[in-house]
Length: 82
Length: 412
Image (tube, rainbow over all chains, first blue to last red; front, side, top):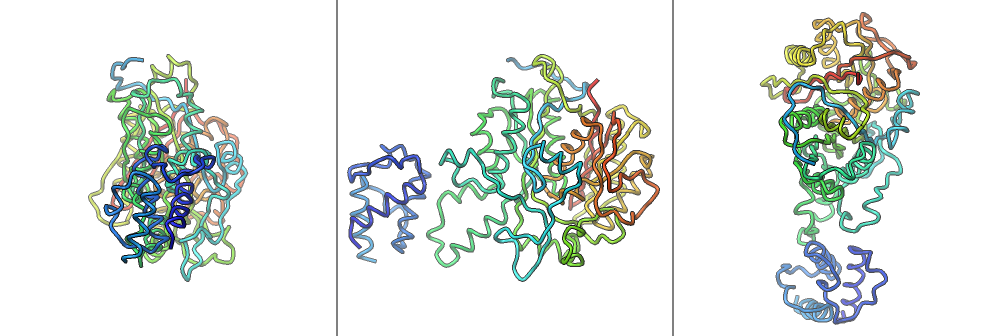
């Protein structure tokens, strides 16, 4: 799966959890924090993407990326390893 | 607004009501169905209520919580939380609480383990892949999320907690709200009987226990719920949530609010029993204590709203307690014959039902009481009846030996 497909999973999950962002044009340098997404919502969003990818890794392994593009890259590399 | 001196004798006005139930969403719809005796019993269809079964009950149709729709923060609110928010919105508006000091408003939610069906559905969904369970389940599984959702939406900053008293939870919340006002902890306190969202596991357990009614009326669900009738063999479930706003008499006067009724006496009694059996002694105790506190004699009680679930032994015990206390001449009907048994919500639903009847000087009918188990009582039959109700008594009982009673009087 490409990083772009994972980025698309991320944005669709964000919209599921925070539908108020439906007018936002997502970019790879967007960060969840800057989009105003709270920590509880962030956890739900990432778990939703992990479920779509069938990627069984601890949530803690997804910490670190500064923006959605970096997060998509990280998840792509993890999904290739698993 | 400042904290007022503790008031330990004046009755406590009820200044706001809200209800979401199978027979009506909002007190106007609810009252209409109640007085017309329109029930909604059928084979239950909500997801997670049946497995190889045909449990009868009354379910809320076409419910939508406006708050959840407009604010994603509440997207994970359970059905119980959503009905609590909607029900509280009605009671809040009714009592006109928007401009009152939030630190002097409290919320007490009656009910424990009320989100069973949705918790079960979520566990079923993630049983094979528990790693993907939504992190927010870590706090939404707790009943206190109902307090969190409501206090967050309405900016309540006084006290907020849940109380568990099985089927007496709703009335227990009202009693605790009254005590919170009496003790001066808050000026206004909302008691909310939470919607007990049971799954097929609870239905099966309650049925096997002999508490929930059998399949005798599977082909005629509208006849299944029949408190105090000789053909009853258990309660019939009904989804409901009710909110009752209580406030100190001096605050009520200061705000110029009218009231539905005043809470003039209340009592609780614990039997010391880990069974589902009712206790004659416990029921007599709460009736006598509530009357004593209200300064009323049994003859002054115009109307009794009983617990009346349809449990043969429960119904018989309750009537024996009422007769022993000299309350066999007061009017009596059974709200649950129309609404079904809301379990944790029931006590609050029935205090609301009593308030509406006192205000409209009208008693609602009792459904399916074709052959009463005791004809010595002043039953309201299958038709509603006009009656001036100055003083009323409402009773609740819960598994595990919990008995409660409250006296309500019309505002002077």
